Length: 295
Length: 306
Image 1 (spheres, rainbow over the protein chains, first blue to last red):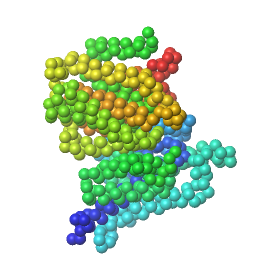
Image 2: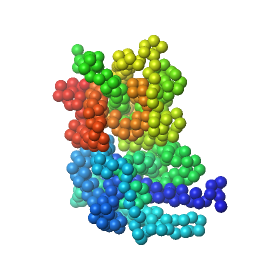
Image 3: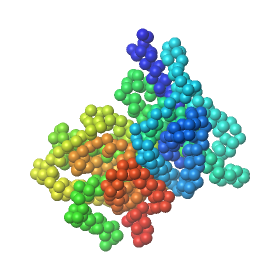
Image 4: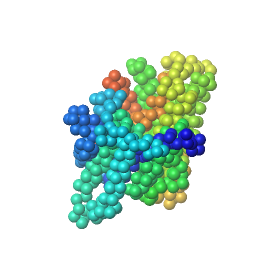
C-alpha cells in the first residue's frame, strides 16, 4: 500500500474528501453570513437553525408529500427563505437604528426557539434521509473511491458560490447591492427601494443556508442540533476570512475544510479545535482577517 | 441614603432572610449566577464588549476548583482561589486575542474561543468527559468550619458573592470605570486623550474573567459537581440572557436577572425542550420591547440609575 508521510494514501485522500465536503458547507454558510452582514450589518445567529430547517424541509417533503431530493433542492430554500423574509419584516427591521449587538441577541434567541421547537417535535436522535437514486454509487478514481453524491455536493456548492459571487460582483443588481452596502441613503435617493432589497437579501442568505441544509441531509443525519455547533465553526471561518469579500469567504471556507481534514490525518486530537487555533493566530497577525478590510 | 444604598440594603436583607422561607441550595445557585452575570455585565454594560464565551471562565474555573478540592485535597478557600487564578490567566490569553476586534467580531471571537475550551474539556482526561467531576468534597473552610453543613456553606457563598459584587461596584465607580465608559462611548476619543484603550479593555476582560471564575469555582463546591454543561455555549447564552432581563449596564440588574432566570429554569425543568424555547422567546421579547430590563425600567421610572 502506498504511503505519504507514513499515512496510507487511501486514508489521506478519504480525509481530504471529507474536508472538502465540510469546506463546501463552511463556504456556503459563511457566504450567506457575509451577504447578510454586508447589507444588514447583522450577524445572523439563526443561520445554523435555518440550515437545520432546510434539512428538515427536505425530510418533510420526502416523508409527507413524497417529493424527492431534486424537488427539495428547489422548494426548501424558497420555503425557508420566506420564513426569513417574515422574520426580517417583523423583527429585524425594528433594530436597524440600534446597536448591531441587538441583532445578534435577537437572532440568537430565535435560534434557541427554533431548535427547541424542533427538538420538542422530532426528538434529538435524528432522522435518516436517503441519497437520491441518480447519485447512488461511486466512481473509482484509481487512487481512491469517490462516492457520487459527495462529488455532487462539492460541485453544486462551487457552482452556487461562484454564481453568487458573479451576481454580486458582475451584474447590475449586484452593483445596486454593493452601492447600498456603502451608502443606503444615497442609493435610496436614486429611486431604488433599499428596504425591499434588504428584506430580499436576508431571504436570499437564509435560502442559501437552507440549500446547504438540503445538501447536508443525505450526508449527516437530520437532527435539531445539526446546525448549532456548526454555526460556531462557521463564525470562526468568517473571522478568519474577514467579511469584506465574497470570494474571500468562499476560499476560506474550502481551505479550512481541507486543513481540518488534514489535521484529522496527522493529529486527530486537534481536529475539533484547529480552526479556532488558526483563528487566534490570524487575529494576532492580521486582525481584520485574511481578506477583510478594517472597518 | 442614595438609591444605590437602599437597593444594596434590600439585596443584603433578601439574601440574609430568604433562607428561612426559600430552599437554600436554590439561593446559593442564584448567588453564583448573579455574581457570574455581574462579572459579565462589567464588560458589556461598562466596556461595551459583548462576550459570547463567558462559559469558558465559569466552566473552566468550576473544573479547576472541583479538581483541586477532590484530587489535590485543597481546602475550599484555596480551591476557589486556584479557580480564580486559572480563570484570570485564561482571561488574559483570550483577552489578548479578542480585544483586537470590536462589536460583533468580538462576540464571535469569544464564542469561538469558548468552543475551543469546550472541546478541550471534552477530550482532557482530568475533566471526566461526559460524567464531569462528581462528588466534589466541600471540605473545611480554613480547616475549621465544616462546609457540608448547609448553613455554613450558605454564609461562605453569601460572603463571596457580596465581596465580588462590592468589588465590581467599586470598579465601576472608580476612575478606571469612568475611562472604561469613555471607551464604550467613543474609543477613538479616549485614545486621542491619551488613554491606552487596549490596556483598559484587557484589564476589564481579565477582571471579568476572574470574577466569572469566582462564580464558577464556588458553584462547583455548592453542587459538588463540575460538568460539560458549565463550559457549553448555552451557558454563555444564559448569562447574556440574565443580564439582558435584569438590565444591561445597571448595577443590580444582573442579580435580579439571575434570580428570574434560575427560578424559571427550576419551574420549567421537567418540560425539557420547552426551557430552551421559553429562554429564546424571552431573548426575542426583551430585544424587541424591553431593552432596558427590569432594573433599567425601574431606574428609568424613578429617574435614578440603579
